[in-house]
Length: 250
Ligand code: G
Ligand code: G
Ligand code: MN
Ligand code: NA
Image (tube, rainbow, N blue to C red; front, side):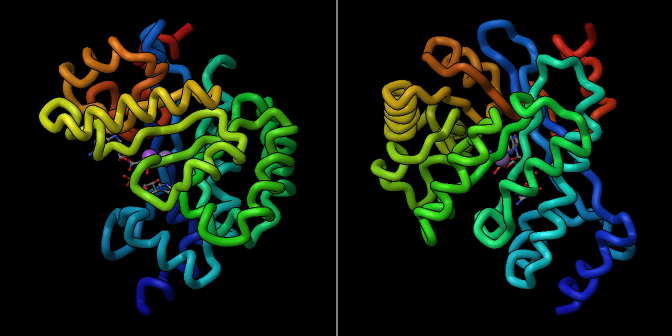
């Protein structure tokens, strides 16, 4: 397709850029992490969402070079942040399987000088679909470096609870559809509280994503949720814009 053709030249012509969205610790109300979110500045079409081009990148194999660039750029930028703030990047299941992710992570840390325990990789439930043992091995190797592994968008995909038990995730992010509905749909609320119970039973921190209202945030404060992310606390933005968040300026 035309978009795939354009995507092939996007890396070499510097059309990608990153925005960052804060994750707020609910105990201290300060930024504990920033999530890097990829954007494509298309020369004609303007900014294109990853929802549109990541599937094309996955089909064409371009996800591997793109998925190497994102953590490098994110860690290079974020190493300017105070050392207590971590950096999260999204890794496609296709890349996790087809690239040598362990080598890629080591290279990223080496080239940027970022401490391993400041890096988090966000994976979706798609990693349970194929080559489960290989993915588990890769994940375990990466974790020995001190890098954290996060289950992203949890609850909407293909999870079996057994996979959640055998995979060493450090944190679980509850999919934002449950957070969106939890105040007016008792079933969504039950799912949110069940995921929290499950996370803690498995020694995983639980993050709420997609927090848009103070009512949602207030409710989360009364749970064991450790961290919240959403437009209420901050939209994805260039890293310089984050300097005004509490905990960023030292
Ligand atoms: O930031 P935004 O809402 O536009 O992101 C849309 C989707 O694209 C989300 O599911 C997000 O996880 C994904 N995404 C954003 N940046 C990256 C990236 O660098 N790599 C991958 N694989 N997915 C990304
Ligand atoms: O799948 P993942 O969680 O990586 O997706 C991140 C995407 O979620 C980003 O593109 C970001 O724009 C979007 N996002 C973050 N916070 C909110 C929110 O509060 N509401 C909505 N609708 N989207 C959000
Ligand atoms: Mn994510
Ligand atoms: Na998510």
